[in-house]
Length: 90
Image 1 (spheres, rainbow, N blue to C red):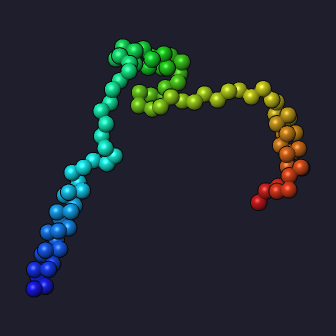
Image 2 (image 1 turned 135 degrees about the vertical axis):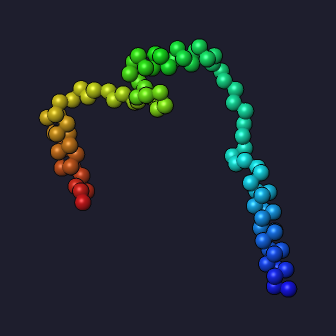
Image 3 (image 1 turned 180 degrees about the horizontal axis):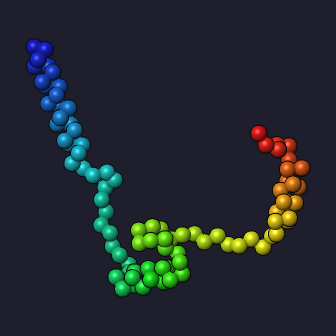
């Protein structure tokens, strides 16, 4: 009797596992491109010419803008912020 119960449980778990494995999650949706291959290649070449691509498989690199403040201006702003704050660090 015990062997029958164990066998039945194994069969039920296997059936449940295979039923769950058949449906992909998340559901697959068909991809529809809005650009031609030539447009994609041209856009890639422009990004590479501007230095926005690290290599062929990475996302574009975010270029940081240069600060217009000098080192002394940043230091004075930092000092003013810590002087007026209730919390000054750990």
